[in-house]
Amino acid sequence: MDLKENEKGFAQIQMAEAMKQHEVGHQRNRIIQKKINEAEQFKNTKQQSGINISELRMLEDYIYQLQDESLSSKRELEHLQKKYQLLKVCYKKKPKKKKRGKT
Image 1 (cartoon, one colour):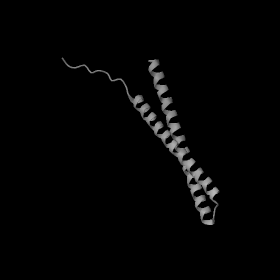
Image 2 (spheres, rainbow, N blue to C red):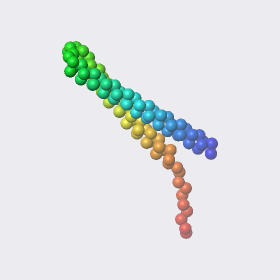
Image 3 (cartoon, one colour):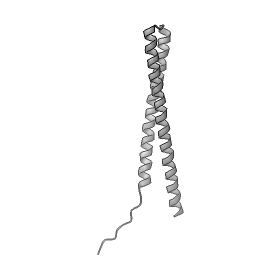
Image 4 (cartoon, rainbow, N blue to C red):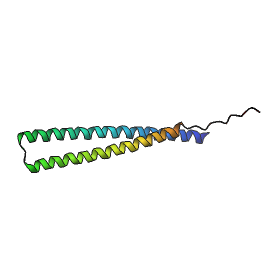
């Protein structure tokens, strides 16, 4: 009985940790997206007022770097979502008692 309770407690801890990691991942992705939007706006403003080509390239490189980071973050979120779903399924599986048929 204690072993079952320990397994249940461990599964609950794993699920809580997976949920926390998932939320942190979403928060990270929102921050990256905000940075992308701000960099794009800054680039557009600079283009309208005049910008030298080297500064423009630096801004574009920074935006590409943020986009790569965003893509990586989204992949990590997908992985965490799958992990959470697997834990959820494993946690909810309970051994079923066999019903005795009438004879």
